[in-house]
Image (cartoon, rainbow, N blue to C red; front, side, top):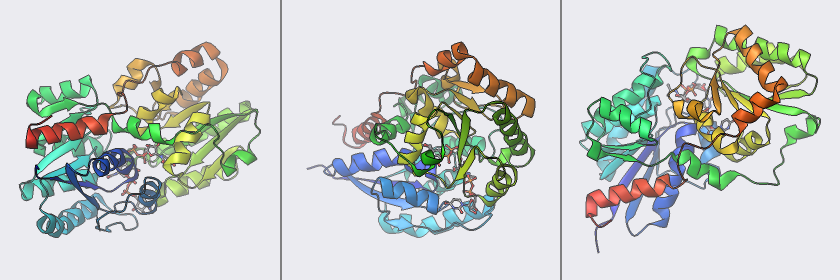
Length: 374
Ligand code: UD1
Ligand code: UDP
């Protein structure tokens, strides 16, 4: 029998956990081929635990690094220092990281220091703008400098990697594991307590906003735009599960506490979030992952950012980049609420992120590299 391949996954935040979970679950199914080692950095705490619980994943190691108002240097140095022992103790064949967070970047540096093969899931996304999104664009570029294997979600992300001189034979187009996760979560009989406070004839806008570069004026402008649009639309409610970052919490409560049809709630677990998205009329977000999920759910998205590394969704017609200028956000919200032709066109887009089997393709490729039998 061939030796099991030891694959260590390292992740720290909610979106990484959601998109790594399908790979961990697939490894558990294929336990004759793979020995999974699950390491969480603990960059997030409650928001990470919510995901682990939904997918019944118990980490083998938790680096527990989160602290209030943590800086980028805090995250980077703590992850690198604390991963040393874990890698030395477990000696993985491969380390897999996901996406573009600071946990991702720091774990990639650790893999390099320990000379362990590094695989990057969701590789090749780019805006080519160093500070947008910040620090994610550099996190993913630097991770790709260090990686040995690239799991690109789309053709376009593969092209970005080739442009940077990464060898084509080390890149596999897999689709995005976000679609694998989505297949597990949507339910027809969904109910959440916030829906009891909303007239069943009203249209729901689902809002998320948390990015570092949007904290401050961009958030204030966007929130004020939403407030004005609600004043002119009596049949619209906004559901905003607020990220636990104290900066985001403060901005959201300061502006929205007095606004009747804005419902500020705790972050939803991923099952609730996917179902709330599916129940909504449209979505407003600066999130990366939500931009990937919306085309599958056939929900238009106003992207509250100046640039996106997910142009596939813009090309498909689901996403519209609207930035955070108050007037512009108001205008785009009004268009979607008042013009059914525009709404229908955006809602009918096709999912560009694969067939929901990305985790399988990733593991097949790794098995093939080690055993050459696939
Ligand atoms: C991080 C990622 C970002 C990703 C986002 C997903 C970096 C630099 N940023 O940003 O790319 O889009 O996660 O949500 O990697 N907090 C809690 N409990 C939690 C999570 C966060 O209290 O479960 C609070 C803490 O006070 C923490 C703060 O939120 O200090 C900020 O968390 P952090 O991970 O540094 O930044 P995010 O904005 O979450
Ligand atoms: N999400 C969630 N609960 C919420 C908000 C978002 O489970 O209250 C999910 C969402 O479905 C997506 C992911 O979290 O899969 C996106 O995470 P986030 O916006 O925190 O990070 P980003 O994708 O911007 O890095």
